[in-house]
Length: 129
Image (cartoon, rainbow, N blue to C red; front, side):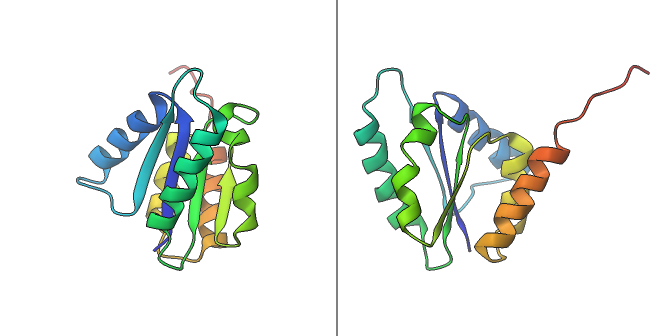
């Protein structure tokens, strides 16, 4: 099963996790959150991410979702790519997370594609009724 790591500005990761737990009716296995606080040192976030990936990876890989490209959470992920079992997506959203959770029994590349599709199709204009 693909592990999922949310690295986001606090408190977004915990909020996504709470919502996903609610929608999936219970505790989610192999999912962790690192909520980055203001002025947190990037090396500290990177260290926490490495430790979380070790816990989450059962050999299937880990998908890391960050909130915004260029922010501390995504910037701390650049050196995570040295591991072929890790993929990082910036611009994470709740639809993206839900889609990744739904398909995470697939291979890592499929989960990445499903998450990206969920993010794209989850952002729509709601027309007036």
